[in-house]
Amino acid sequence: MSTFSRRKFLTTAGLSTVSAIALNACTGGGEAPKTTDATTKASPSATATSTPKVSAADAPETTKAKLGFIALTDSAPLIIAKEKGLFEKYGMKDVEVLKQASWGTTRDNIVLGSEAGGIDGAHILSPMPYLIAEGKITNGNKVPMYILARLNTNGQAMSIANEFKELKITLKSDTLKDSFAKIKSGGKEVKCAVTFPGGNHDLWMRYWLAANGIDPNNDVSTIVVPPPQMVANMKAGNMQAFCVGEPWNARLVAQNIGYTAFITGEFWKDHPEKAFTMRGDWVDKNPKAAKAILAAVLEAQVWCEKAENKEEMCKIIGADKWLKVPAAEILGRLQGKVDYGDGRTLDNPDLAMKFWKDNASYPYKSHDLWFVTEDMRWGYFDADTDSKKLVDKVNREDIWKEAAKMIGKEADIPKSTSRGIETFFDGVKFDPENPSEYLKGLKIKKA
Image (cartoon, rainbow, N blue to C red; front, side, top):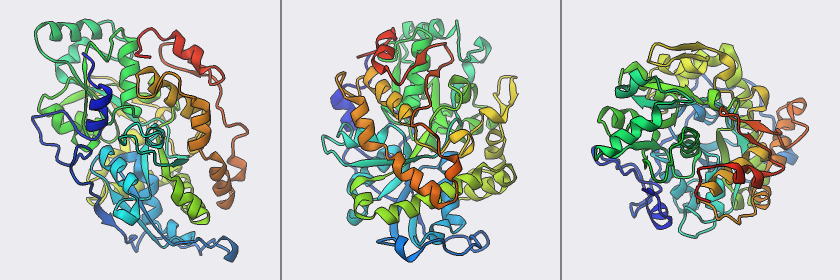
């Protein structure tokens, strides 16, 4: 069955369809948007010792901004920028980093903007700024959005319920289609949980299912669950599989509730993940402030990348006011050490989450073009969408370059806004010079 019709998508994008556990935190279906848990003071013991790096000519137009984050490891650059005093270092002394309950809440608060009690920018799923800018998930309200940086590459995973452990389901599985079909023929619904329709995890899930011969629109039901609630819902038996960022896959294994089929670095090595986005009108009004905020985030990414900082980073972000997860359950996978929970292990830092290494922070337009193309594949964007024009409007890699120079990282600026042809685990290639040919070659799709 098709889980998300256009109308249902618009009205339920922020809500989980899981019934066993109340997901009161999700908004998007009439509930008033909320920003939870403001964290406005940097830890005194962790603040940066360097002097402010802002000249009079670069003084920001405002020192205030409200930024949202979801409790995920890849939100670390925003948290570290706050805790290490990096926003203050670049003249943005009044930046708030605010916990959001779900991606639906993030969307709603971005639409509101800080002047109406919402937020100005956020740690976000990379396709969301495009969907917001085109009014696809905002009931037609087109809010201008800019992607200023990629926050990370890699670092997500596909989790499976323990009942499938003996089937040895991994990336390419001969048993996946038959096992799901058997459940469905027995009158039960096969549920695969993602974090937001049209977002990264939805696209990873759909691509993986389709590559294994499963039509995600007809053979399974795709349900929406906020990242921090994935483990509890798997424990309650509300889904057979879920795709989410860390540390929630590691937590599932630690609690022996399910196992990891694969990490996304195996799915697509160094794939783009979360983005740092801000409302376009806020950036246009406050260009120096936006560049200052971005400089702080980029410097935090550089800090997060260093191996000697990983343990401290996990202790900081694991605190109750941030992720509320034991640091030990974050650290392993961040270092590339994976216990899949089914007897397999991995120790490969090159497949782990990256914040700066290998151009992880640079917002390649070629990557955003893939996200838009995949959202066209599944009907979130119209088939005739001018994807290149849309990417050029939303992706502000030019501001990233300015901020990189500001922090002394001009040498790390890529020579091209395209990373070139990308290859997925099933051998399919995406050529950003010809996205329509890629779309045409996919067997299972809605477009």
